[in-house]
Length: 105
Ligand SMILES: C[S@@+](CC[C@H](N)C(=O)[O-])C[C@H]1O[C@@H](n2cnc3c(N)ncnc32)[C@H](O)[C@@H]1O
Image 1 (cartoon, protein in one colour):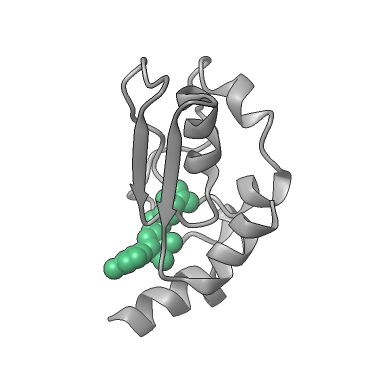
Image 2 (cartoon, helix red, strand yellow; image 1 turned 90 degrees about the vertical axis):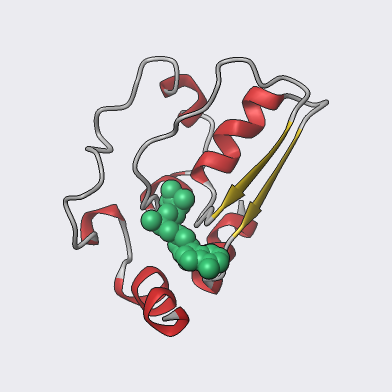
């Protein structure tokens, strides 16, 4: 199973356009509050976004957030802006190609 997941997210998908499922919500319908946060995130991270939208409480300042299956880190970088300099966001993923993008930026 690990190999299948890593092959799909690491090698078959090169961008959000390649997703082979319509199960996720439409990533182009981003809520207004999230847009300015995404504007600060590198294009390569955004292109490798394979998620279903970011759901989080509105007040996160100073908190620690764990993102399991963070992929290239779009939500990690968005959440980092919400927790601020006194908070912390930890992203965990098992697909090296995704982590390489996250680490580059
Ligand atoms: C649907 S993608 C979402 C990625 C990311 N959250 C995003 O929004 O782009 C699922 C991610 O979970 C990771 N993943 C799946 N099973 C995992 C596991 N057991 N341990 C760590 N990561 C896992 C995959 O490598 C993939 O990057």
